[in-house]
Length: 274
Image (cartoon, rainbow, N blue to C red; front, side, top):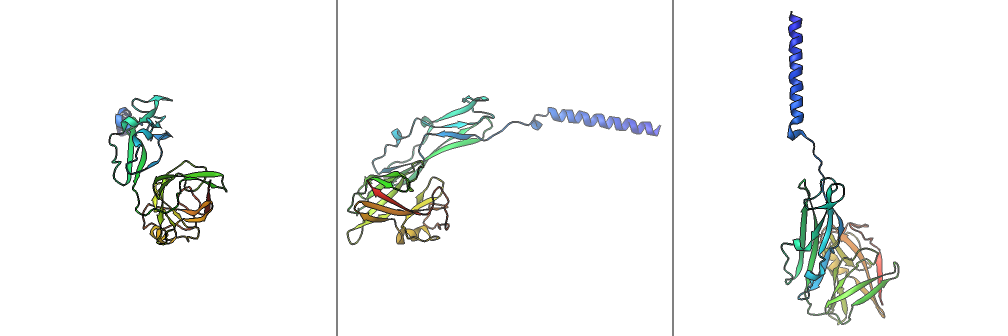
């Protein structure tokens, strides 16, 4: 009799556990749901735009479609195409809610976010840099195309003000353009004197053009004062520098030795005006 009672108790306990397990499966909190993080598949907007003060055309320069975001797991509200029927979505210029000040000097950012149906986000960002004139520009007009014979790539220096230029390709390689400011000051002896302050780069750190004899492992401020890029020849105008990258665009940042933190090597680069 005792054994029968134990057997009956065991059966009742097993049934109770089975009922609880079935109930748990039906619990909405226990259902596994697909989730993912969306990504930018196509970006039409440049990483940065550089203008002289009072010369900005950012509103027309930025394309109507900034980027295409994709999520093939859960998709987007209002999205289209793909596995879910809503995999892709356009990120539009019209969705920029707040435009930055384009008059005051310095760098500013524009960011537009997109959330998928799981409420995870991706975003597209572009930077705007407003440069001002300088009081003592160097005597030589530097604007024009400069060929790097080692790669066959011609970079462009665009004049913003006298002595203030936008350079579209710091290393003279086959990469997407990313603008930086290059300055040409008049020295105390009346000659040209290039300057390239550390600036944000496309990798989220800092970039600085330094003279061909610059050593490694100094601070950005040391390179600015002691090892600026140089004009190696005036006939034709020939520019020389090394591309150093840093963990941040700070004057206190230290160059990380014989290597880079972005897309560039550290060899000397020579550019001849065409």
